[in-house]
Length: 143
Picture 1 (spheres, one colour):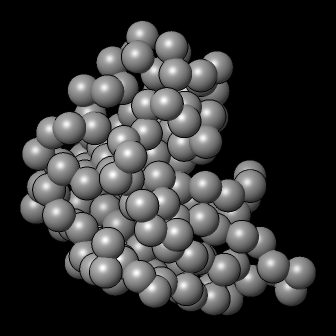
Picture 2: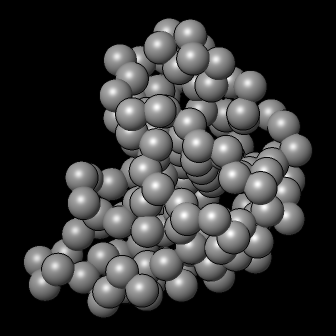
């Protein structure tokens, strides 16, 4: 847990959000789960793009809203999961989501609050808040 705290960053642009994710990726180890929280348009996918780039993913990272999971090859596998369209933990289990949480890669879950019982107790929780001036505050809340 000390590896991730304190973590509090103000981003002024999508490029800064991506760079923040890239730097954050250096802290991640095999098998970790990143639980991303924040409103629509906060920058969760941009942060994920940065994490993926930091983990050596070369292909374009896109939102898996309709496919639920995108898998990317990097230094370790990256599983980008979007729970927005899921109705809860049963839906997550039905699409085989749990298979991505305990493997040899890093799982990044957008809208993780929609599947609370599926998120491992030791997941790294990152919240992205939209500030009044349009900037983003990216906070690691720990486990």
